[in-house]
Image: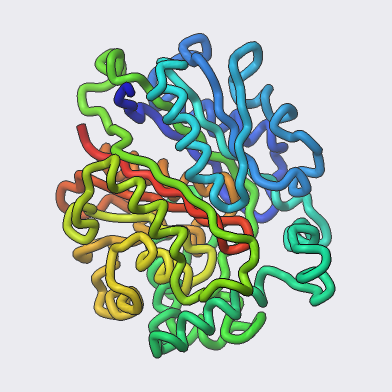
Amino acid sequence: MKEVAVIGAGMTLFRRHLKETGKELSFLATKMAMEDAGIQKDDIDMVVMGSAPDAFDGIHMKGENLIDGSAATNKPYVRVFNGGGTGVFAPIAGWWHVASGVADICLVVCEEKMGNCYPHPQTAFRHIWDPILDRPLNTNLVWLFAMEYNRYMTVHNIKKEWIAEVAVKNKRNAVGHPCAQLADPNITVDDVLNSEIMAWPVNRLDISPPSDGAAALIYCNKDIVHKFTDDPIYVGGVGWGIDSTMWTNRDLYFPRYVANAAKMCYKKAGINNPTKDIDFAEPYDPFTYKELHHMEGMLLCKKGEAAKLTHEGVTQRDGDMPICPSGGLLGVGNPIAATMGQKVCELYWQLAGKAGKRQIPGDPRVGVGMAWGDIMQMATVIALRRG
């Protein structure tokens, strides 16, 4: 397999209701990534699109609809999606097209237009449930995650105040992000705990906001990367995996599917000791507890330790293991597939020294990003490293 480098990235504003169409958002992110890489449309060999449910945009087979905004007309093109896992799975798909030799330069675009879904984006998930076992219960994702949150918190005897600190950290981190939707430099733990209860123990500020937005990433074969940069950022490893849809049959306190995907990624990346070999990470954080849950699944700490590390400041941007220095989904926003911007593009920006006010102190060499989706079952993991 060929080594694959990241040479450019771009990201639009994340907002609840943007006026731009999905095509226009894709175009804006693509344009920024191409300008960052210093390439033209004709330099791109193929395009990978990541976008989650068609119901958000209100267009079936929306991958085909988005092609015009993604520099993909008359080029090899594929759309991939697996719910919230798409933000890392799409760049994984782009990676394998370059690693296999199919393309020398591959553009990855991730788009989401959740604001078009009425009365609320949550309605798009009404039909993901088993029609016999789940749907008669009138299930929704918030109360399902509330059960997982409660199980995780109860098994490890974690203080809810410590979990709320994740929202405080990420929304403050997002202050330095030019695309952020819900940055807040003054948010406190009390603000989180006193916000509206959605489904106990989940408060409103425990949840990331629905968003519109797009992100783009450009991969290049190592053999020609010298044409674009003298300090390339490489994909070290990738991993993915999925567990059963039968969430009632799993103990929700630990995401074993995340651990499996992380181990796959780390093996390829030569990461033998994640707590020492990884300098920072962007685990998927649609809810406060999920950042902690996913830190443990990514083997960045022992089971039940993530909240303690957060409370002690280890996961702050200037801590020993910065977690979500971008501001994550909780601070920047959650346009599902387009969270590639925080979970993969941010790795590139940090390693390339392009993160601006968000830049991690020191000299980070290895970063890991992760996404999570479907009915608490899909995990996608990617590691980037300095050349």
